[in-house]
Each structure stands twice: as C-alpha cells, then as structure tokens.
Image (cartoon, rainbow, N blue to C red; front, side, top):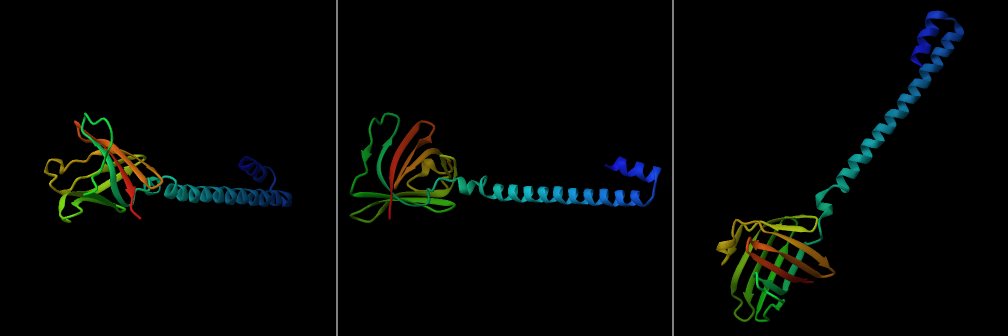
Amino acid sequence: MTIKIVIALILNFDRSSKTFLFNELENMKKALATTLSVVVLSIAILTISAGTVFNPKKDKVNIQGTWQLVSYKYGPTASGFTDFPEVMRRIKVINETHFIWVQYDTLSRKVGSSAGGSYTVVGNTYTESLDFGLAMDGYLKRSPAFTIKIEGDMLFQSGLLTPDYKIEEIWKRVK
C-alpha cells in the first residue's frame, strides 16, 4: 500500500489522488490500531496467565495445616508400617513458608524432640530445611526432600532423611 501511495503522488496529485491517499492513510491507521489492540490484549492475557498458571504458590499441593503422625516406617530394613504409640504424640504445623513438628509424651506433657524450619513444595516434592531442633543434632542444617501425596485428610510422606536413612510417614490432618 505504501508503494501505491508514492506512485499516486508522483504520477498525478489531483483531487482523486488526494481522496485515494486519504482513504489509504485511514485504512492504515485502522489496521495499526487493530494490530496494537491485539498486541496489548495478548500482553495482558499473558501477564495474567503468568501470574496464575505459572505461579508456584498456586501449583503447590495444599500441605498447609496441622497434622498428627499416625504411622511410620523408619530405616532401611523396615518392612511394614508401625502405628505411632498412643502415649506419644507428634504434631506437625505447616504454614505458608515454615513447618515445625514436636513430639511429646501425652502423660507427662514433656517434649522429647522437635524440629522446624522453612520448606518448599515443587510438584509433589516437599523439601524441608532443618534449621533448628531439639534432640535432632545429627539432622540439623540438612534439607531432605520427600515425595508427598495428599488424599483427603491424609498426608503420605516418604524419602531419605539422610543418604542411608529412609522414612515413610502417614499423617492425618487435625481439624
């Protein structure tokens, strides 16, 4: 279209050429406005999508809440799950950025062990950063990664606490 305008200007700049030129410029302006509208709309859609579809917080498994340990398998030779003793209780609280668990004797109410720190969830991989603890000296400053699955009010967590110590835990959501 630009070539047509130039040729019209060179050959014959009469009234019909002015009309032609004006019409072509109007058409180009409308086309440019439409193109810009599509580009702006596309950018807006991509920005909104990036904030929801690709937002890691939205992709996280809903692990937040209070959990009580129900049963476990610890160590390389554990063959079956063991119910957590009724005289003991282990509670884990997970908020948006941190976790803490505490194990205590239900009769004496004394804490036997505890650990906590920050965590991340990517897909079904839950990684704890063991930043502090009580009776957990050998595990502090580690970041064990676990595979997790939530079914209803049950949290299934399994992985290596250390390179040679596997744990599998079943937690129930406390309501």
